[in-house]
Image (cartoon, rainbow, N blue to C red):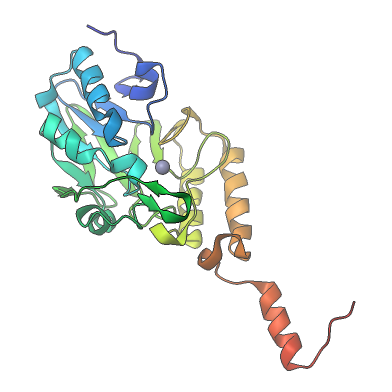
Length: 261
Ligand SMILES: [Zn+2]
């Protein structure tokens, strides 16, 4: 049997457990009589992850649910294989259902043709919907479901006591999940989600990539400030809500003002 490395009471993360980078963070929430998985990662690591869970002496039949935090391929490509091995239902936010069930390679970021990135994706049926305000019971534990759109429309976070499983909203270095119109990024909503995390009283953030960390208002505020500026810059294309320079240019053109060089 493999010794379980709990990060917090009832929380194991599989990269930490494996002592190597497998891919996205995969959290096992151990409710004693049953457990859930939050994300599973890409298909090539599913069997290794399931084997680790077995070696930690969890009964695979006690897996109550596999949660997709959102519909990006690096988090969900392995869902089908995980369901075959664990025989557990898959849960996601309603906004993630379309891209997952149709295996939409653009919205899931599975295919980035210009960079020759192609992750084969199988249509994945969603068995259970998770909405804002829902409570997931795992044995004696309760996770409050937060809908935190912005990175993608279906991004979920989960509050459990003093922990917030914060998805792709914010990382330890103040970076955030990819901002790209192709998978439905929305800067104003992203900022709202970050403000909600800033205002929350959780003590630790458990992101979907990289190390877990103590919730530090400065880390979150720095991201809010950056995204607030991006709203008025063309850096993320159609995710911007305005571009003041172009408005100025348009008004210069119609008033016949020539450049003052
Ligand atoms: Zn991600």
